[in-house]
Amino acid sequence: MSGDSSGSTQFWDGNQGTFLQAFTDHKADVLSLAPSPSNQSVFAAGADGQVSVYKVICALICSSFGLN
Image (cartoon, rainbow, N blue to C red; front, side, top):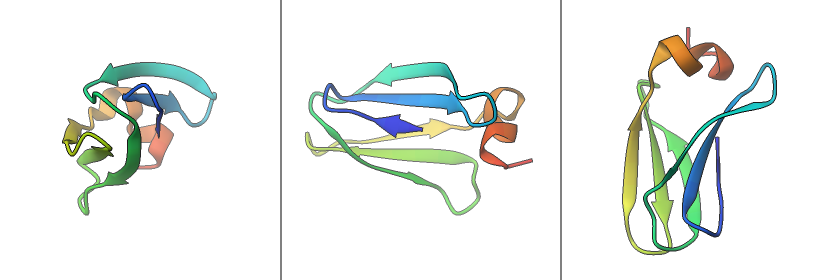
């Protein structure tokens, strides 16, 4: 996963290095990304003061993050 200065959070296939999906929930830079302790969600914090939560759908990305 990655975040950028346009407020977008991107998810990638770690094995193939290919782009999976992006979400643009922030109005400013995405500053920090972190998995939940259970690895069921990902948090993205932005310079706009918002924290977005993304639920991990294992059929798509668990193997990429080693969460199986």
